[in-house]
Image (cartoon, rainbow, N blue to C red; front, side):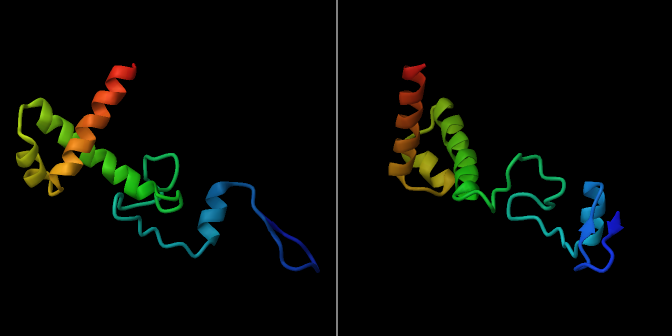
Length: 102
């Protein structure tokens, strides 16, 4: 790391660790992962427009499809997952559309 002399105090960093060490950063994570620095995702869900919502829906949809594969009814799945029956129908119909196009 070096500081410029007589200038505006610009800091030139040689490693990413130096940048993290100098920053006043509190790694508070998000609702999905407890720590930003150890998050396994390639892009931050908080910074990606609609990212967190899409991520959470993906998990919900997988849960709906798992229940459907086990033979549970639409009403039962809706009650278990905490969504409307119409949402369950949409997820199942969307999966059938994806499966038939492959």
